[in-house]
Image (tube, rainbow, N blue to C red):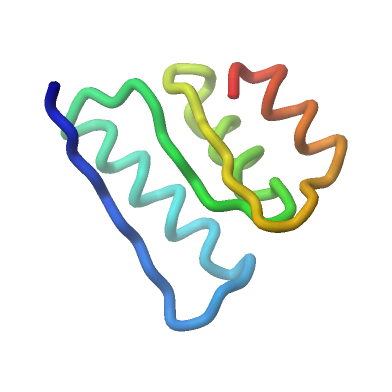
Length: 81
């Protein structure tokens, strides 16, 4: 089994990082075959946006340390996450 990772960090957390993270993921998935993506998403907003950007091609696993919004949790699950 081959495991490759892309780690993106920011100086400060927040929604202003979402677009950058999603663009980096989309770029990386064009370079290598990816079956699953693990993404940290406090409220679920980032995970929902990522699921939409990936259009169901790759399974998204969202990790949250706070309770995720119910509608985001449902949306992620409906999109295969």
